[in-house]
Image 1 (cartoon, one colour):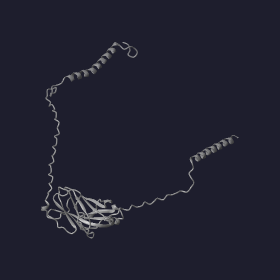
Image 2: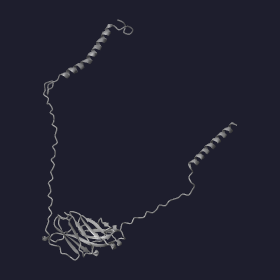
Image 3: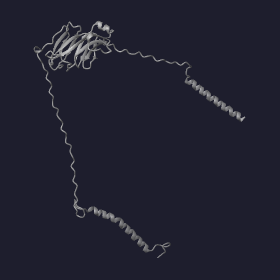
Image 4: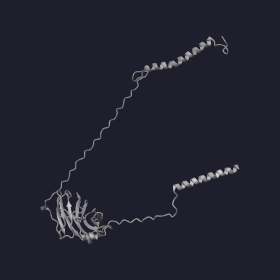
Length: 296
């Protein structure tokens, strides 16, 4: 056997090395072989290797959403209008300046003020405005007996009148509810237009709101051809008036002062270019002469 330092290793060491390599290879392959064998073996369903029974988990059924039943709305009964023949109506007592018109719920009607009234008024009442046969009364009202002061925008009141609703027994209905909007028309004179300084749009129709205790200026249309004012009422009936409400005076804008600066005109681009070019020439000439002076 040769020396382990200088000579060739002996057969003993070669065999020992081969044996160790084979052992290492065996140890590396054994777990792989064992794993593949164990993968093919297994206990029966619900048992372990020792024969113990293991409970098999059962699948939980998925809950289904039950649709919520929808409530079917109960149909409401449409109120049937009560129609009373005029022969069975207790008429409202007429006065010298009032007019009474029977209003049936199932038919349109037109009411007009009395010819002797100081103000001419026409009221168009469509169907379904009232639920039962009623009586519409138009009567003069003195401008000195208005229930409250008119809005500040109204400079003067030309005329006033009341429109009330009574039932078939002749009793007045307080703040009657209107199922449809009624249309009120009233002509105006040349004197009324002159009082409005010739502005048709300044003539306005107003209604007194008894519940709120104040006047409401209605959206009024002035027809300058027929000289007629038209307005609609959809809430209730009460005292009405025609007044003058001039449009608001628009403030004249104050002209802004224009400041004019006194001075020369701004130099043009050409002049600036010439000045810059001259500056470059002067600087270059000065540098040239300074170098010449140093050489000499």
